[in-house]
Amino acid sequence: MYGVWTPEQVQAAEEPVLARTPEGALMRRAAYGAAGVALRMLGERTGGVVGRRVVVLVGAGNNGGDGLWAGVELRRRGAAVTAVLLSPDRAHPAGLAALRAARARVLTEVEPAVTAVGRADLVLDAIVGTSARGGLRDPAPLLVGAADTARVPVLAIDTPSGVDPLVGTVPGDGSAVTAAETVTFGARKPVHVLNRARCGPVTLIDIGLGPELPEPTVRVLDAADVGARWPVPGPTDDKYTQGVVGIAAGSATYPGAAVLASGAAALATSGMVRYAGSAADEVRAAWPEVVATDHVSDAGRVQAWAVGPGLGTDDAGAATLRHVLDAGVPVLADADAITLLGADADLRARAAATTTLVTPHAGEFARLVASLDDPPDPAVDRVTAARRAAAELGVTVLLKGNATVVAAPDGRVLVHPAGSSWLATAGSGDVLSGVAGALLAAGLDPVDAAGCAAFVHARAAELGSAGSPVPASHVQAALSDAIRSVREAV
Ligand SMILES: NC(=O)C1=CN([C@@H]2O[C@H](COP(=O)(O)OP(=O)(O)OC[C@H]3O[C@@H](n4cnc5c(N)ncnc54)[C@H](OP(=O)(O)O)[C@@H]3O)[C@@H](O)[C@H]2O)[C@@H](O)CC1
Ligand SMILES: [K+]
Image (cartoon, rainbow, N blue to C red; front, side, top):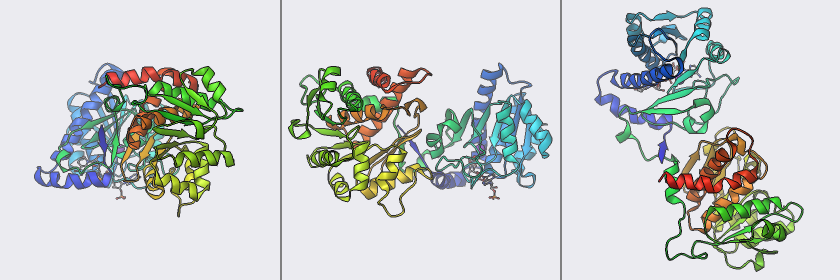
């Protein structure tokens, strides 16, 4: 597990460290770390360093300073370094003097700079870092565009410029760095987990901030964390002690959701799965181990319900949802159950009164929060939106998307950054529901259930896809391999 800190928290942690270290030492640590990543990238991509062309895009703040000092280090190692000053009067004075002394080329005109970027082996993006406000300013978009066009790899220093460090979105006209890799200092920032596509792999350089950082409010689970939390039967366990999950999903017309969710639950844990709904025959045929009945009222005892996929939003669907919310066990609500919650204050009150985990995609999230004052918008700030929905509705929220955000009513947040785009496929959410429901039944806290389910679901998509589209039934089929892989990581 690792933490993520906001730019504000990182800046606050830097202050005491700056106060007790010699002037410029922190920046030199950061720059030395950045140069190390640049040297590795040059080696991997061009087979060497000496004579390789590196262009540093240098902004007006300390991020630019990092870039200039990294340039000094690369110059020392024999690279041909060109610094492009985007605000020539405000470039970090000591860094610029050192780079000039190292006989690097310094450009301030746009035209030669664009040419240099197009010919580079590597571009260092030191345009702006944690103090970024708004979109990229001229002439940065031209230079960033030149790197994209020429397919020159970019190493983002601290954060990819043009992407908001706090919320991970691209403001303004949409121009921003798409980095091949990012090197960051002291602590990971939200952009690194919220916008993996813009950051690429992130290397964290220790600059000694550790003791000064507060408890992180946003955390990321790794494979070992998920493996350690995954329920494993002990010698005294039987099918009941492992947790019985009830699946209230699907319909006779659309039995697929029921089959996907029930099968995923059966694969996720060794607990028992009950199914209740009008697709009982289809579920039995596909998953003989599932005990299927027609109605939730005669399903028998369960330790958690997963309700919603293919449920329908009519009175019967609402009655089913009311029944499971009143059952006194944790409830996972997805799909139609979320639409019903969004439309009905009484159902929302029942959801708040029990342990409820909701798993909306963007559209369902909008319906879920429509009744709130000033409804939060994930397109503006995913973490805040999920956190507010959780706090104001009294439920744990798993907001699906390229970065999955899990927020609890008590303010805890998990982010799963590796959202595979292949997961945006029909039925994929039904698989996630089954897994998360089974984990709730096994006794996991809703945040852990959501975080572990999201991780294994994404890994199953990777394993089932290998670079091609992956239908939900293949995601379901890859669950066992995904669970095995996280267990092996422990
Ligand atoms: N503190 C430390 O000791 C350490 C800090 N470290 C490094 O410092 C970085 C933070 O440095 P920072 O605070 O100086 O700000 P930074 O991100 O460089 O940008 C501010 C400048 O950019 C400008 N600007 C703003 N928005 C813009 C935009 N959209 N597009 C273009 N320009 C924009 C803004 O202009 P202004 O608004 O003032 O006109 C201002 O001049 C941090 O990310 C890390 O790399 C490490 O070395 C470790 C030690
Ligand atoms: K940057």
